[in-house]
Length: 178
Image 1 (cartoon, rainbow, N blue to C red):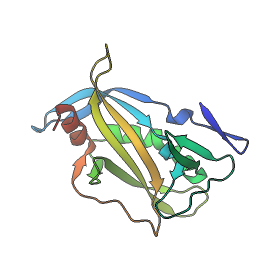
Image 2 (tube, rainbow, N blue to C red; image 1 turned 120 degrees about the vertical axis):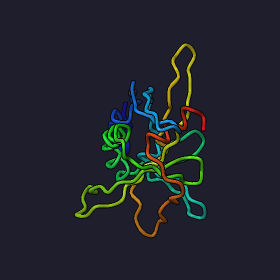
Image 3 (cartoon, rainbow, N blue to C red; image 1 turned 45 degrees about the vertical axis):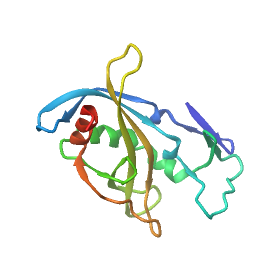
Image 4 (tube, rainbow, N blue to C red; image 1 turned 180 degrees about the vertical axis):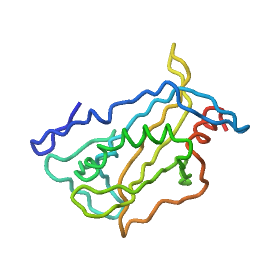
């Protein structure tokens, strides 16, 4: 799985769906249980999109379609996306990892990372949505979609940090439908 931008191929194999058969979750009684989680990544992890009021003219050969929406390959987002599978693995297996409600029905997680070609750390945000699903003939699971991931730098605003939960509690609430 790869894309070609201006004749340069970029592998997307690191963003293939990941399946974790036993992820620790916590219910409202603080009881620990384990359920499967499938992690999927959107093209927003390696592309940028149109913004209201700003003309959108994608660079030649860099156009990526997301359904009917136009996006543009972003080398910096792509470079950062290379760490996403490891970050998600650690996030799903840490009893203390915190996620915040964005106010838009999803959650975000952030951590400081060293940016490619920079000498300083930057805040890298991962926006995700979780749903309990059951495919035909399959067992129930949590489908965790990484909706977007990028470093936030001035003048862009930081996302709202409303209700904070551990990842385990958020997944447990999602599993129990709360």
